[in-house]
Image 1: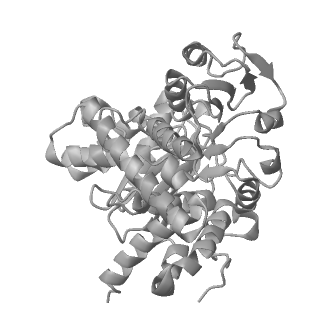
Image 2 (image 1 turned 60 degrees about the vertical axis):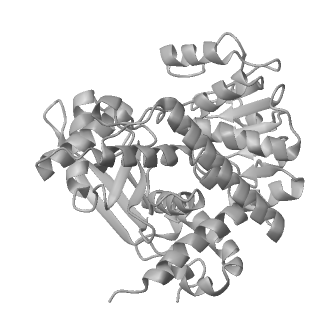
Length: 428
């Protein structure tokens, strides 16, 4: 049996990173798993890791090689499910952790998936559209042996979108000899995508945010909200909170931060970002160059919706929010969790807060199998019901066990995963 933080042979101490955070989270939940704790090593070892070379011909005729990953963490409850990201800082540790958090997330909201994740270490802004398509198709061909609608279903993530999913679906389908729409989710509507999918993650953040605010006795109307990340998650959440009467007082993206104490005009900011690619230069708010000052903003609700490990012991004490909604995956380190808990900050963990995307991905997958599609109102109603039920179950367990919402969510999810593992037994 491994020690709690044993580093797998394929990782080094230097790149343990997000995987180490995940392992510490599992260690914290283990005492609450009872007899199922004998299976806990299952959660500490990805089921399958595929590292692939992705060679393409550049537009200038040169050959470029990129490193790609697909990690299937656990499939005890169903096929693997998780996004594919294109980013220059992608590492194996990151993809392993993200796949594991998908296992926990899917179980926490009780959709019949395991966890998986993929990525290519590349800055997509350095590629032409043709190069991006060739890279996507080559990557899909390389991981073709382990994905499929009943095995592992990719989806969009950082720097990937419905166009990338269309290329992935087409490549897989060409290799299979027939159209297989259910191999990915987050596709264009015309190819079997689901209405409501693009806004699903941000909408889920808003739904659980309202539930958390109610538990804290906080009125959404007039509440002060600060958001890190203004893409598909943060941007949608900002719009929904603003429409409900909240004041979005600070937004930070990959370039800079804008603040306005009386509330930022979100539609105007979204229009600016659509035209300029960043909040930088927006005239309707104060531009703040010091990125660290974002964490000191006077707000009621803080939404980290960018990348992982943004809230650490370095800045956790500066945070003035009453509620943190984790729109990103793994944005808070365990050390920061402890600090925030001592400060009385309610942290709604990523595995609940940002589960709206995978929930509607599940709806898309079901619709593809049946070739029968729901209206957007039906999608949003089903999403809201599942998110509220998941939050309620986690909140109730947290009160009973006197633990944080993150620990409670992990107890719910890990119990479901390990019960499935135990019931299935070991083969052979």
